[in-house]
Amino acid sequence: MILEQYYIECLSHASYLIGDQSSGRAVVVDPRRDITEYLADAKKYGLTIEGVINTHFHADFVSGHLELVDATGAWIGFGEAAETDYPIRRLAHGEHLSLGEVDLEILSTPGHTWESISVLVREQAGAEPVAVLTGDSLFIGDVGRPDLVNIGDSSTGDLARAMYRTIHETLMRLPDSVTVMPAHGAGSSCGKNLSTELTSTIGEQRLTNPSVQPMSEDAFVAMLTQGQPAAPAYFASDAAMNKRVHPLLRQDREVPEMTPGQLRQALDARVRVVDARPVEDFATGHLRGTVNVGFDGRFAETGGMVADVGEPVALITYPGQEQEAALRLARVGSDNVLGYLNVGPDGRFPAELADLVQPAARITVAELDALLADDAVTLVDIRNPGEREAGAIPGSVHIPLAQLRTRVGEIPTGKPVVLHCAGGWRSSVAASLLRANDFEQVSDLLGGYHAWVDAHAAV
Image 1: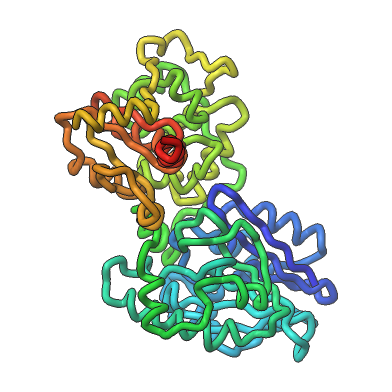
Image 2 (image 1 turned 90 degrees about the vertical axis):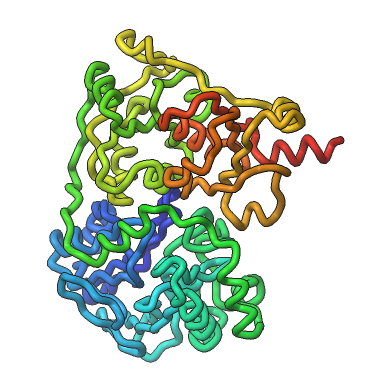
């Protein structure tokens, strides 16, 4: 049996290839849009991909099922509750899919979404299961959030109750030895407390996962519906894309290089220009009107927070990063990258753009404390709700980064604005986003909330 996991850090996303070497038949589970790795491994192992299984309608990325169908002619499988505008194979609870000797059993596991399923893997029909691909139902250290289908809708509570039954009546009844292989890891907005571990076992989760411990259904619902990360606006767009036919990602596409003049024109036209350099480099000098989303962080998801899906985007990158940056945006549906401008290793911009170069203001904890004491600043906390529950800087306004672009009107303009996150990466995104929206006197906090806590603990 072949069971390969493919993990990408920028989306904390795991997908899988399951194959039977005796028959040469295989399926891919929860694929991303750039499918060359699946195709290459199938060829390496002598497998034919005959099916694509999505455990649910993903919201945080655009799935690669249409690309795989185009490349292989495979069928697309979803849980029975799925509704799409392309042909699908409806997979029922208890149904078995044979790849030859390898047997896949479908488990209905609603809770994250209504159509959610898990895939139980056996090396031979009738044998003890060896793994379960849980999608966004059971994570390592947590369970999937129930509020992405209809945010604010009453069905959130119903989904949370469905998740309670999924966990306690289906997944936790599997043998302790079964390997748990979810669709996401730490950093994903599809849950609260996901582990950095990429696999576990049912037995380990039974002992260590707080969300699967014995508790009443009401207690579980209360726990699950509080403190979830703010959902980026692009989640709704991606979930909708995954339900309908949409343009395929060209696997060999390359975005073009832009001249300094073309980039200036893009800025003048208010095109979203994303500077993918690290925070420190951006702060030293960047082009006025650009937004910092560092390539060294959660570039894909955060890129989806600062630009609408389908909105034209231009990139500023270091040489060799431009095509990967464009690909990462394409993974969340942002296909409209107009081009890129490279910055030299010394951080210097072309001379034609020298008049647009400016530093980004960043302040220390001591400077922030002085401003707060004089009531001379508006402090905005852009962390997620669960982070803020653990503590906050007194007097701060809470607007999660995922909501900042649509809530800028809530920020007073009569004072300088300081933004902070946990450590300083997200706050550079937020501060640059406000500057690009014509806010003046904007800075972010060096070291973020962690630095503030450390400074005040030492007093």
